[in-house]
Length: 228
Image: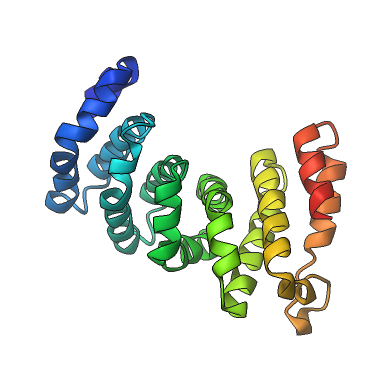
């Protein structure tokens, strides 16, 4: 697997060939060695390189989503595997079809949401997870019927911003997601504030704080201002 990663990085055409001819063979390794963390991470890294081919990326969609779902359920305490699976998922979300699958199949609420709520200290999981949320927000938020789920996504944004205040990329993605959430689900406004008895979180102060902390970053400045 490690040798294959180097070969694929040097040959973009081969990435597409691998997806068309050998995807199922690669996915079999997850079934044969589900608990071998080193091998599982290596296969995810191969899939990550293969996903860079935009033409064949949609072919990875559903089969890889199913593998990630099973691996996340197996490895709730092994963040290193979750990190690699979320890296793959972030790239796959660049395809519209995969974004729709994540929402329609309940993958976001069943897999990504619980992981972001529990694995709050792992910066890469949070960064990839928030970017996944951002890529799927236009499908997720307008069709979300549950107010409780909207509250949980707001909590995800708050936890990511508060735990990783120095991480510029997380802050940018969180501010952008927050804008989309507020635009589509205005019922979350009462949960922004400083009264814990009302289940409020002070996201507004975090938006102000990142402007002060990262004042020389124009993208973050703009994103935070839009959120405010």
